[in-house]
Image 1 (cartoon, helix red, strand yellow):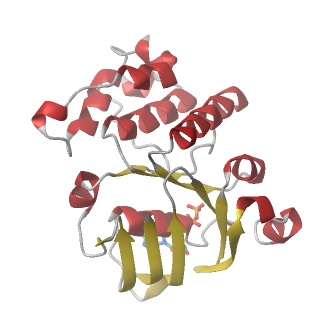
Image 2: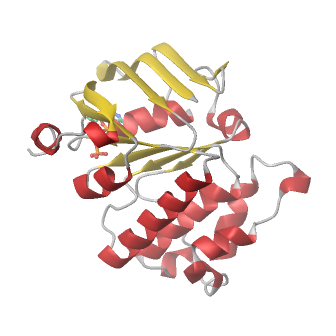
Length: 231
Ligand SMILES: Nc1ncnc2c1ncn2[C@@H]1O[C@H](COP(=O)(O)OP(=O)(O)OP(=O)(O)O)[C@@H](O)[C@H]1O
């Protein structure tokens, strides 16, 4: 289980997260919703260790991880699919997948066939350069690269952004399968309400660096959430 407790995060003098708390359970999808610039990515960066928090606790599987860097968090089973995907455009699809090996011990460095079952399109493209893939294919590659690390916590930052509807559906199916397997906690940052509603076991809506609404997905009231999502 992930427990984020009262975290504050700053960029210089500007405070991006104010006393933010969140929990995420294994076998569940926890959605973080909100408009542009309210702090969703900052929360994802705080959880994965990309940006330090100034105060508060981040506890994963009972261990304080707030002071750990991103590599140590990855070794503790935390994987991140960043906004914008961050695919290495000059590397092939296979080489991009190999970059997921970094936190793994040598004997664990294998790409499980399940990854190709989840993303059959990648199997046909292993020798293509990352930069030659469509945006949707790059997003699938970014998720696959995160799965190579066999994470127990997967943090996805806006995986549907700028992606065509057919691939959004594929990504939705993959997240559903991962949830059903029950071995992973999934934190999903999302601006696309319908996508979040279909997947959310629990949710948190952010506004100006704070969590204003949270609860179980089944109790999510569309109007209340949308009020914080429209400009
Ligand atoms: N590296 C940075 N340096 C300074 N300010 C930043 C930095 N990254 C984000 N911010 C600011 O922090 C606030 C929260 O940004 P954040 O990216 O977390 O929001 P977001 O909800 O994820 O938005 P988006 O959907 O646009 O990514 C914004 O005001 C943003 O301008």
